[in-house]
Length: 142
Image 1 (cartoon, helix red, strand yellow):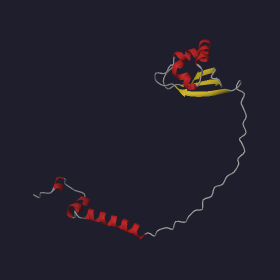
Image 2 (cartoon, rainbow, N blue to C red):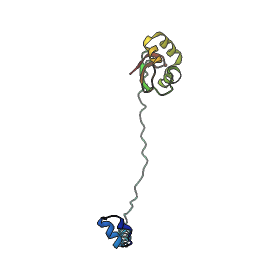
Image 3 (cartoon, helix red, strand yellow):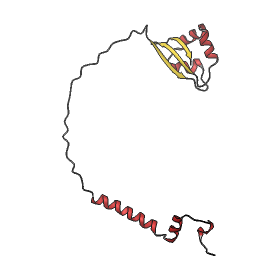
Image 4 (tube, rainbow, N blue to C red):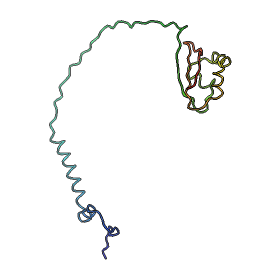
């Protein structure tokens, strides 16, 4: 009986047999490949570096046209997802950019907003329409 480490397997792969018979082959192949790469870098011609002429160009740009929006009629729609541990007044409405005093009056007066505040669940998307000053107009859940 032979004392071979690979004799446990009834049929070994031919590549394993070759490695057992020629243990010097992988280091030689690796060394030749590495030598070939080093030789390729050594033989590659050096590129000429041409100097690029740098010059400074200054142009006078006209000022941008600015138009002010009328803040009284402007409404912004914002959406945010309810996170775990959120309360509607303390954490959700400030993330939506809504003033708390305005939100309290809207939540007290609107039945749908009150239901939303009671059944707030993580993952629900809440949409708020607010004015430029942060005054709440509508609050909906999707």
